[in-house]
Length: 479
Image 1 (cartoon, one colour):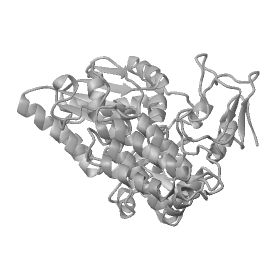
Image 2 (cartoon, rainbow, N blue to C red):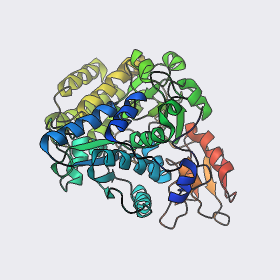
Image 3 (cartoon, rainbow, N blue to C red):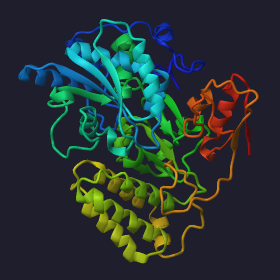
Image 4 (cartoon, rainbow, N blue to C red):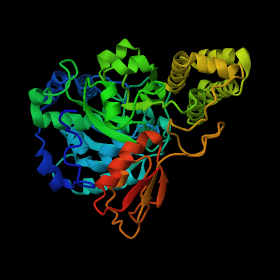
């Protein structure tokens, strides 16, 4: 899949300390403000958190606001991944925190920022980033990490900024740009973990070196969270089908691109889709935060959509009617379709979607309605059959990753591979958790929390990889 830059040097290390990080990547150069902006423009760097806003314009906007208001600046790294299907930023922060910090410090010093703050939600990520910050040399811009509430809306810019300022981690509902008023009221550069890591790589390689992979319009690589089970780095523009096959997957009944605010691609479209902004836009999709979720043939698509819609409703910030009342009502209507509620239930779904669109205090209602609308377009026969009481005859396997017990739809008992740990051999290296973050959870003692773990069918190839990578030969897979 081309040269891996962001994950370079991670194959045999849990978390490279700063010395190991520098041995792989070298020192990050210091750049002037105009050089940072020119570099970001030359590599067409865009935010990797979902919106895809041009990074050079963000930096220039912060600098202009600071100059106009006569204030210093600040930098926020958005390390929140509130969606269960997204793993890439956790992978970066747990395995390559210094690369992220390098990019943030580079931008901060070019802007003359007072501090860099990394906002994270996962306790393990918090510990790893805190340890990495302790390894930084003195004399640079101050860097700190702060843990916030783990929920879907935490990563919204005003929500995270409010949380870092000591307020509730909820969207403000106001149209105030962070570049104008952000951390402590200062003009603030707010961007995603991967964005800063890409900047750090580009600063070392230069624009021409960075452009050696990817496409002319979208150079470089992208980090992808695949099936909620593994993370892959691929060149921009790589064929979607090639990426899926590398981890033992196929397009199945269709592929959800961009996560739970994303778009479903039909199997025929997914076979020829490429992972570039330009190509995906032709299909009405965006890569978003890099989540790719193929739906296997064995699961019920309607039940899977209902589960996600219910969880999205539960993740409401509760600050406006469309979120507080509209999304639960939409989930209820979808569940009525799944249970055979007739054409009236389908009509109710359409009405609920129309009621929440463009009326929310943040983008959550629009994103959820868009996900449901895309599912209706992708699986029209499935929804019609369920509404009429015919159904599809398939169980709901819970393929779309969610936290335990999202409610509403029963999940079929797991039938498939299992990953086993031999406690007499395990040495707590943790590589298995890095390879299978959605399957293996590490306990407080630094060892896997369970001796036997169910492996989703789509993650089987990665489970086998974890077995082969285990330095102590302490794992095995059974069917």
